[in-house]
Image (cartoon, rainbow, N blue to C red; front, top):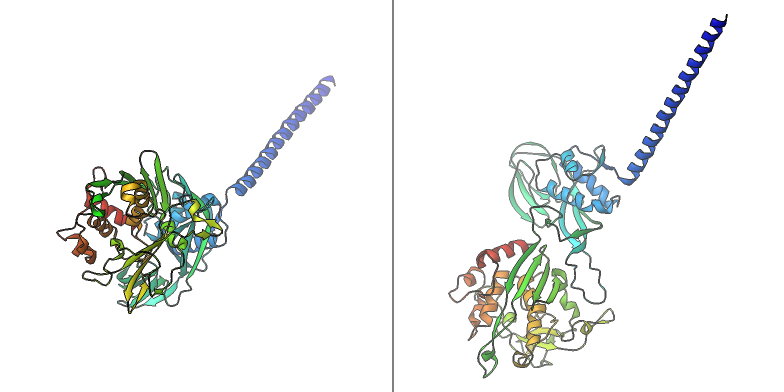
Length: 475
């Protein structure tokens, strides 16, 4: 009897221990499940999973367009989506899923709907200015905004040899390029069948801008974002010989300091000279400098200030064009206020500038970007060559060198190569004024045309440097 009681007690104890272990095991499993759910929820909150259709390139682009348009994107992901779109448009061999993995974009599958073919027109940058001028950009970083234009894509039956105008910059695979225009390309089909196309005339072309993201220049990047194969910096040195004898009875040359000009990311200049001095300006700020000009009258019977001829405002539109040789420049130092801010607070030697041509008994204002006047952040006078050389230096740094690289305005039809040749010609003794009427190859190959010996990039010839600059600055 006693043995049976002991056996029963042992069974109860063993069962109790088993139940205790079982409860602990269940508690551990339950806690693990709770922790897993919490981590999953937190992860899903921290890392967005974008809804993307990976069926084709077009559906991938349509999904990205929708995400950007709906402002559903995390700030740090802007450049990822931009790079993805650029690579997609370039005809990458990677499929949509591989592209998403390459740029580390988390996503969930989405069913196909509302196809959209995107094309990236440009990056717009926003300047954060404290007062009137900060150079237009920060040398080490800049905040940019993505702008995308896109059109609807649909299935179209096309016969072999049929030619169609399509939205975008490139022809689809299996089509032959015929001609192109801005955001429009004409292509010829190589085979009969159904194609996914964005027809130009039928497309609902739309443009939108996403949020801002930051680009840092201390690391390599492409025009479109970050990539190891691209160097945003292109530096060269330059200086100008200004012949003092050209301005009066004195002889000799005044040599501006050797300036190191750095083109950054193809739309910004950093110009350094005299070891501790530097000036920064971006392409947009340079092209918009005439916002600070006073309002000049379109036609005048007499000019309000002492006019002067100016080589760079007497250029021909084509070889043999002499219609601008009598153009006259005037500068006025009236104070200019923009949004209540005096531009002279930042640039005390600034001046408004206009160019006029005498025709039909009146002086007509020249407004074409090739020869028009442009606001000077550092005005100069003839006597400055003798008594105020610092003003001459500042004029070249603030006004002339940016012009050589960027031209007068977006509609300026001159090339960077032409402007460097004209600079050399304008300061020769005597000036090679006849070169003003030569353009293009007629100018490049002219026996009197050459470049300043101080246009230098280490290890690169002048021709190679100019070709590289022109390629980087091509719109």
